[in-house]
Length: 343
Ligand SMILES: C[S@@+](CC[C@H](N)C(=O)[O-])C[C@H]1O[C@@H](n2cnc3c(N)ncnc32)[C@H](O)[C@@H]1O
Image (cartoon, rainbow, N blue to C red; front, side, top):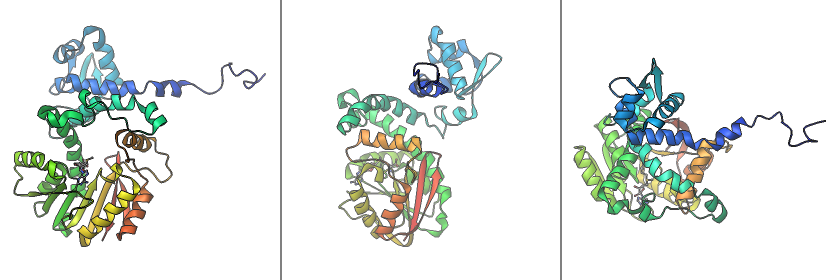
């Protein structure tokens, strides 16, 4: 008798991976809540036992040990002789007030991910993006009207662009260039990181005019008002300031192919001869197999009407079509792809 004769009999295929995948959201949520509750800050200076961590971060006794041991199992804490401590990863990136703090990005994800992804089935059926109700604090939602919320939102994004800027600062031989423009550079955080790392560079952040006050406030606070300029405009219709290097981060994934091509053609005109364009996004491998990139692409389809991630090869084609030469692709931060092309 074979298993085909009796489909209900135990098969040789282990169902474990299916069950694990079904509950894989739980691991992300444990990390999100640990940041929310300040667990990594509570362990920043010294190891502590469960009762002490619970006390410092407001954990209920009934939940504390399983929660802390789950964090340990996920590699986010270490436990020895009943004492918990941060791992090198969480000590480096999740202790509040540290220069490399990424917790703002975790908090932002915690706030926005579940409501949106909870509506994936609807999006798959209708093709419609599933913005959260702005009154319930959707992806950007009413944050613009609440300065505190907006500040946390932007801080969350900056936590990420700090890392990205630090990476770009050493991935390019900037000594060969005099200027750069960050297109869609938001409140100028990445431009600030690059300008600080390479003081000889003339730095410009180009974004919608409505972003100017956020830029002015942020760059002023960083003490870089005389180093980074802001040019307000629409990159599809207004003149794009010329520079030796133009950076396009998390921009192409917001638009459909026609608009990506149109934008890259305008960018070509803005890059000075001998200069570079740097494009980064969570691009899809050409064989379309990397699940993380494909999930990221679905995410863009969920949160925007025409956005998605796109294949590295497609990016090369659009760049060449725009007039650039020699596009190279390289992994960036383990999550993104950086494509560099020359004019
Ligand atoms: C997803 S954010 C990317 C921010 C930043 N480059 C990064 O990598 O984190 C997109 C940015 O592009 C800007 N933007 C969107 N459409 C634009 C347009 N038509 N012209 C100029 N800026 C635009 C938005 O205001 C926003 O700051």
